[in-house]
Length: 428
Image 1 (spheres, rainbow, N blue to C red):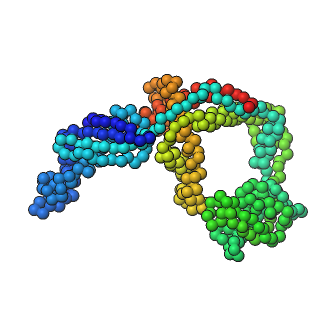
Image 2 (cartoon, rainbow, N blue to C red; image 1 turned 135 degrees about the vertical axis):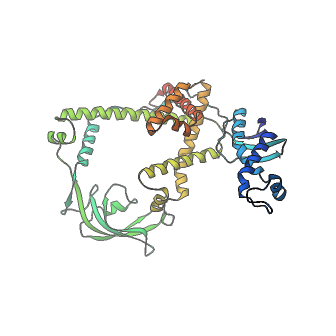
Image 3 (tube, one colour; image 1 turned 90 degrees about the vertical axis):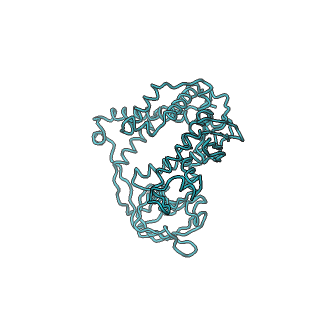
């Protein structure tokens, strides 16, 4: 086979003309005939025994051509893309068969390719530092979290409900005088101030006492996932059964011994300080990477094909679905339960997808500009790392992740490290 021509026909679109010699094409046609003949009935012949010429006479000379072309096209396209040196985007190609006979198979196809990227001033990006100092207040806040985790709920009978209380309530949502679907529950546990319910609901429960029955007016947010409730005013009829508050254990050496490996308060606090310092350091590094990435997305200039954004949205949704499955939930059930629609799910990930695509394109360009290289040894080490993470053999990982993709990931990672190391901290 050979690449006859490669021409840019419009922005981010290339037309390739590929030729496969007639002998190869005819051999593939004959192979298709041998595979399909067992399913073909021709009068005068036993099933599966009809000559190819007879079948072609009855159904047309090209009866086996389409399947033969479908078998040859993927490898021919892969060859042509490599020959043309194109970075092709996952998209449905336009395919036209210009010639198909014993002389040659000629295929013309149009493909979407990655855009031409320009980027300047990526070295010395200004980033705002994030403090890594651990204060006494940070330590006290962490101790409070541990005390809360070890707290117990105590029933309150001598005062109204207040923020941070857990209340047990019945509620019924009413819209236009009728209960609406999903708006009713009995003996529901709700922590006031948690933001678990729509704005205004929890605040309206504060101040009421056990045994009270009352009605509140609230309005659903404009971006609420259930279409018929978006921005709609409703009422909730509520009965308050119980108020509970969290009783925190006393912070002393007995508590320290119960929740840690330490015997003294000072040793426990020193350990908390060390762990918080490490967490803050990691947070500062992540924030620096985020700031650099945001700036790269601004600096890169390119006419990015919309399909690249859509593909990344699909990747993010697939990742979300996989995380749900690890929790024993399928995406369809989750969407039905939450009222989430395909459009809302798409929009949820679209902005992130746009940013990720732009940043990756920027880093790929920087890797080229800076002549960043990845060795075969580095690729092999990455395969071993992935195999260890997935707890499978290296050969299985290689069957899933092409070396070209691994190499590209390593190049962009090196480019990001280069840009991050050159970033300049500023208070501005």
